[in-house]
Amino acid sequence: MFSRWARVRAATVVAAAAAAAVGLAPTAVAAVGDGGPVSPIAATWTPSLATSGTDGSVERIRKIEQCGSTMYAVGLFSSIKQKVTTYARNNAFSFSATTGAMTPWAPNVNGQVNSIVLSADCSTAYLGGTFTSINGTAAKNIAAVSTTTGVVVTAFARTAGGKVNTLARSGTHLLVGGNFTSINGSTKKYMVSLNLTTGKDDGYVNLNISGNYVYTDDGGQQSKGNSTNVYNFSMSPDGSRLLAMGVFTSVGGQARRQIFMLDLGATSTTVNGWYSKDFDQNCHIVEPFYLQDATWSPDTSKVYVATTGYKAANGLGYRTWEPRGDLTAPFTNICDAAAAYPSGPAVQRHDWIDYTGCDSLYSVAADSSAVYTGGHQRWADSPVQCDGNGNGTKVVSPGMSGLNLAGDSILDPNVLVPTNRYSKGRGLGATDMLITSAGLWIASDNAQNVDACGKTSTGAIARGHQGLCFLPYP
Image 1 (cartoon, helix red, strand yellow):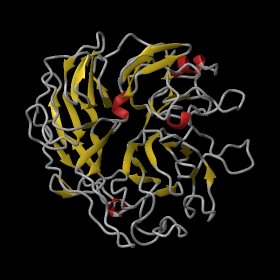
Image 2: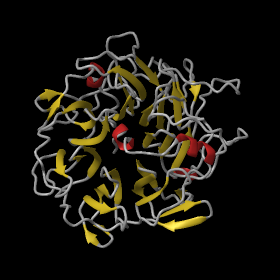
Image 3: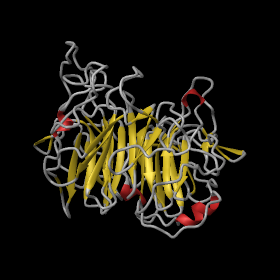
Image 4: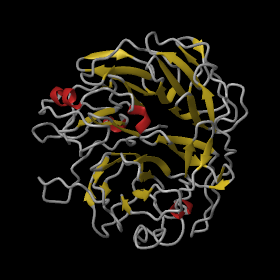
């Protein structure tokens, strides 16, 4: 799925240009994630999925990336609309980060692209997903593509024996995570480091990842099938550490579930001691893997996570009328919640947990003022109620939420009922969030004809944002 801060370290877009494009007062250029929170007023110039989803089909933008002044987006789609023009684009496209103007880049990938990362000079895009060809050239689930021509870079090996979920670049290393059990001649499973030029295993990652989640809930039901994989990455702002999410119980000889942290050394990687016993707790049997995304505070002192999971499989929170978890305990379940942890190299207690009330979160981003979460949630700040049973308090927060650094909703002052400052159409849920120096990018889908994101300058619901939305810094 998706690396966060390293994805925008090469970005040169200025906040003033983005603000001017949506009619806001110019502001000084800030470091990535320095400041905030972002405006709830959505930019009007961003591209979107061209189809509405009214026929029952679902398209989605799965991942967004910035390199220089250009944004790159990948996923599952066949056409993109920008203003009044529709462009044929099969599962990958790029556009101006300040005007939304589409570029000619059209790799024509014949299957879903789950992740994208760029070379340091922005000349090469590395793509991972479930596909077999790009612009007519055979490429199985992994490939390098020219950002000028869109053609496959044939010097880079391109055969993964299974789905590629997530990519990140660390110096000269392309870090790859997925369901694969072999890739470009290497027999390493689930996570590997590839040479950026040849695509071959460069030996930087040797983790022996294994295990899956097998447990029984308080109703006597067994957890449903889940296979070992690495699902998502998040790079620290300084590039020294990497968070990896997925299905595993052992990583580098260390017991880990849901998430692990890697130290990225000069010649090799090692598993960091950072962890929490919260991650050992089980959620609903149909969602054994629940920690979908994580990100860092700008100063790297905190890690924020976003989860699915519905409800606890055992103990407090298993029954829908109970509190979702024990916020005073040293550890508890974090099912359907956002949570914050110190990033130090030890077993950590959560700083806070913000429950959605039994709705999934899939993405999280943070700046120095706020934590943003995306999913198909209806509420935030909902420590007791589940699925609208009416128990306890909650804040209306459809599709996305903004939380302050204490883990509480940033409230909209213009409404009487407790309502989060931010919202978007729920659909299947926002699958990626990316903070840049200009603001917050949100990737999602068009399910149920969802096109709402944020507000207009008059306070009305902003429409026309199927799959992609941008909230600038004011």
